[in-house]
Figure 1 (cartoon, rainbow, N blue to C red):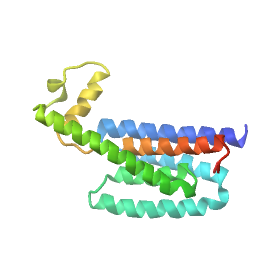
Figure 2 (cartoon, rainbow, N blue to C red):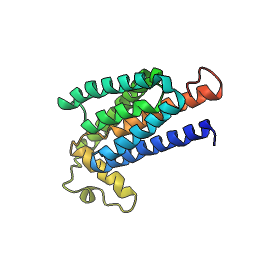
Figure 3 (tube, rainbow, N blue to C red):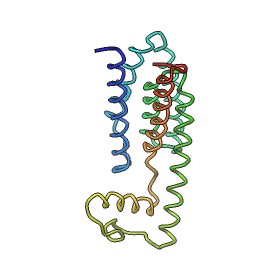
Length: 188
């Protein structure tokens, strides 16, 4: 097995951890520490394989992010799970790409916020404010998940920011893969 294969497997595992965090955040508005630790573990393994001499920079960036975002969580500007997940996600990419990762997450978060605010406005103007999701949105199967989310939106629950983290990270990883595929400044 080549180093590139191991790298790809670890990156896929870390991305899978992000997807699981996203599902958990949408369903329960909660990101479990075990998921964050899994993403962190795969990221640390990635850095040790691809850029072992720069692990200390990744540690410094991650610790700084955790402190700064932890303060945001402390003042209820974001969720604690989101802060921890962003700091852990930084390990999935080389340290020099962390600024762009944060920018991509912020843009995705802004777009997601607009979607949630627009949806909340539409639901409130339509006077769809259910006590229980199934009352306002009688659906079955997979549509029930969407109905539950509409109910959470109209009730004013917080937005699941793990969606933005997943979207921003997806873009950053895709950008890195494209750069490596075309041999333009590859960090892998």
